[in-house]
Image 1 (cartoon, helix red, strand yellow):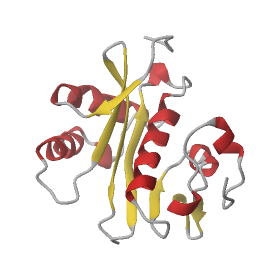
Image 2 (cartoon, one colour):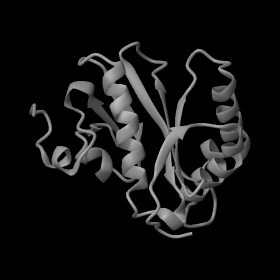
Image 3 (cartoon, helix red, strand yellow):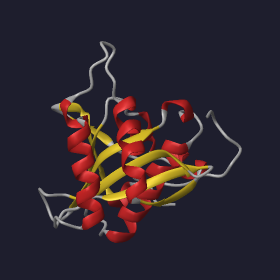
Image 4 (cartoon, one colour):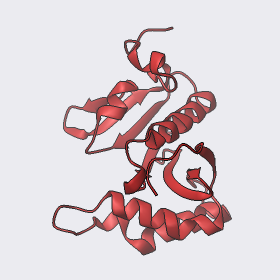
Length: 174
């Protein structure tokens, strides 16, 4: 499948999604030498998804699935931070390789950030580690000084949503 004219549906995680989402995340993180970082191990990802489905852990992830034509094509996982009651973490975010560039990742990211904004106070923050920072910078995330791949945004500054939102300067109210 390639970019489709069919609409993107964003929904919650279902049991039948797990194997497809594990493959999407792993494929999105293959290094040039063909290896995949340990945090994207099939068993680790599968356990995380099933822990989320069964609500076994207090800090379970929220998982949003992007679906086109009945098939999962993207995923974003986020949760309340384990480090601070004022924080959130985006742990996994990926789009099927064949669907990249169709806006699926952006729509999933905006859906997650919209939920975080509505579920948080203005003094809360969101953390993410990403080698590709542009999407986060557009939404007012800033790299941490000692680790540029680790980014943080204050909830009061996050700009999810429309293109108009993304061009508004960070830190300025609408």
